[in-house]
Image 1 (cartoon, one colour):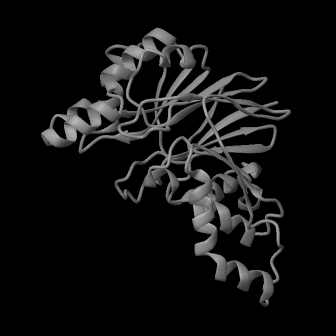
Image 2 (image 1 turned 120 degrees about the vertical axis):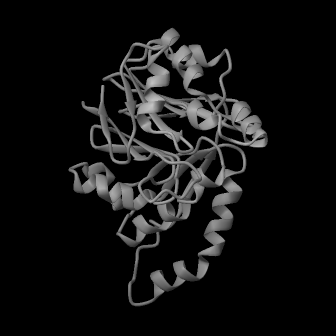
Length: 279
């Protein structure tokens, strides 16, 4: 068994053409498990397929785990629901997400009702399965298990969201933890402990200092600073710390990693779209 983490999107709400919206794929034994659906997700998956990751061929995309329902994490959801079907996916998309996910998928399906009808009954004659979605709304605790992976969700604090989660994936090769969007809370230490790869959101203090007081208050209460992440990593000692959903505000990736490395002496990876990380 070989477990890989592919950073499909490392961006944030800023429409940076070099970074798609937040999305991470865990690939285990040829199967893909996708966390979040930021803008551009299927095209980034196609890019990973071109790099040799067959599990991320668009028609193979069939499992999604949503950390929360912020738009930058879900605008790619209709893309994931329908584009793989157009590319001949023959299975429904499985969606695991917080309360509200079922309604979101229901409304998106209704919005594309005419498209679905034309593709099924017009000249294309697409199958009648691949456009469908099966939704399971989740809480904290184990949420998914198959022969490759056990997935558990844990609650995180992210601004005013009542339901926001991180995910812990356990495979025969090791453990991958995805933070989702979160500010530090004491219980994160236990959820992160033992991670071979910790994929974590973060903001750069050098750029943060230039922000308005309004935005400083928001980001400080909703996200994790470089120094906070350095302190967390120093306590849990992940095998690799990979940064995504990076908020720089004019600073550089080097600025960010240096801020973390002043506190944490382990391996820090400044994530870019389509990076492949192995345990």
